[in-house]
Length: 91
Length: 525
Image (cartoon, rainbow over all chains, first blue to last red):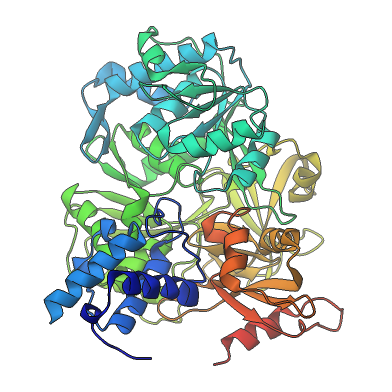
């Protein structure tokens, strides 16, 4: 697995990779970038931990728990935004 | 005789301006809560609700949902809070069993209600729409929040009493159909009155409302707070996702009592969300629903030396909790199991053998409960009721509830749980019958064989659900696709998160699926 910063990716690639993380690590097929993930219960407290660890490993970013906001995880688009911000901060 | 709604009426009379519920920016006084629930009761009665009728609540956790619970009780009816994360198919089964006179709902249930209405699954139930506006809804509405507001707010002359049902709570059923546990006013009152006295709860208490309203534990959050004249702080479910947000709430609201399943406490420990001497206002921390792994308890107790820690134990069938154990001092070893203690007032826990005779101290037996918390039985299911609630052989007028837990009595006379006699498991406090998940997998007709087993995870020991499956010959199935289809039948907490394909399932000498072998197989690296 390659670990590179998110900055080199297009938004489409980023979404594609995040969606792949959902399939591989959480066995979850997310239908669209705007599909609601939290209220539906698709992502819960345990899967969120796994998701954060997977995002950190895949994109080489640091996502300390006490800096996270619930809104960052509402949709795939929001998660992509979080990764983009974290990459910009890290570089 | 006190009915559950009477506690609010009493506070509204003596301290109408005292805060009953604080939910984010929303503050509801006892006076306002009393008035709104009176108005809702009148609207329900006007709609034809009569003593003994059922009302389903499709309302997310909020002051409005709690006002609706009280309104239903004042209309002499029983309520069932429905988990909105359930797929329509599961809600449908609950409504079919319940035959509610009215379904109370808000905007969050719009999609779910639309699907149920489209498929003609609402039966004769009328919809009470607790939103001010009811424009462009794809289903007919009997009355709205605006209509409720126009009803008279003076006290309603309820006729219900001790033995009337207060609520029916649905839990996972081993045959694939959720079962409804019926709970009377007296069942709840006995526990709540004891707990308020034992814990010394009072009007200056600020109490957490962590559990979902369809979950038995929430009954103590809500009615414990109201019986004590305290303030209830319902916790928005989304906060659970981020442990430091929950810690922030406890700090900012200066909660004095926290009551939850252990999983959120473990999640907070893992996320390092609790600082040394954190939460200075907190007096007591209670947990129920499943065992609190000792490692996690040590983490909490060493950080909060000013707090008392109490383990409560009890299935929904025996109402909130039947036994308690106040942990006297921080355990010194991870291996020390925390006992479930001794019976609450009016409750007795018995460790019995198969002839229902007591097992000698130290020996393992089936755990039974008798006493004032015992539910009258399962909703419309005399067969299941007879199987679980058995006559006490030493007193034919008495009943015993078979918990399905295995236990022993230790040297100090305290009960210690040692496991389950069946395939029920707990995940995040939810009772899960593996049989219900397996029945749903079977219904998909996508697999040749499948079994679901709990497997240990890293960290503080919360298990994950693993599905082991054998596809039909020559067929390929993707776990993500299976999980998605399963989500149409089961709530999210019942969906397996780990999947493993096998050529065939291991069998034990009796020809049954060898679950132990499966667990070993999944535990192997």
